[in-house]
Amino acid sequence: MALDAETAEFLSFKASLIIGAIGADGRPFATRGWGLTVTPGDEVHGRVLVPAEDAGALAHLAGGGRIAITGTDVPTLRSVQLKGRVAEFVACTDDDLRVHERHAEGFVSDVAMADHIPREHIALMRPTSVVTCTFTADEAFDQTPGPSAGARLLGPER
Image 1 (cartoon, rainbow, N blue to C red):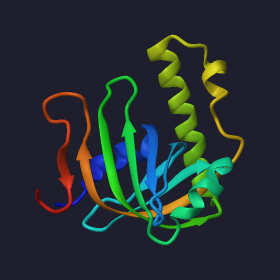
Image 2 (image 1 turned 60 degrees about the vertical axis):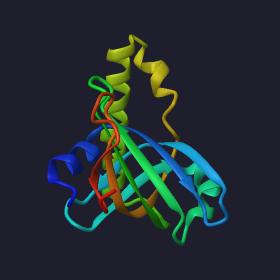
Image 3 (image 1 turned 45 degrees about the vertical axis):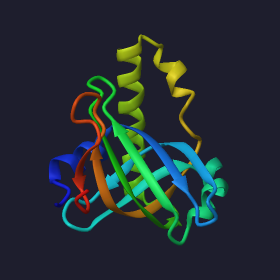
């Protein structure tokens, strides 16, 4: 089953992003993502933007470490999780930086509206700089709270 265009667009727009990862050495790591671009289709590739201050901790993932990226729409709690392998860390392109700005603005706005927290307080979470982590996803799951949580969207049948 392929990742459909609507799901790829949902993840690439302004979903709140949590990244969980395990390096080849077995060390786990988690951080917030600050922008995501995902290609739809049978081969799902992506670029997720991570805080530069976490780049050192994430570097042990390069060369095939496992990664899970969960994107959640703050107002509706719709959630999708991608699982796959890290390819490499690269410098941000101008397109990546535009994705980061759109994502950060959408995230701050959604959390301020949903949780009634002043925007300037949420904006303090924004990293001062980001790096790009490229990856290939081989599984996707619906993680929206409710009876369908955990349903496979992409990958081998259970």
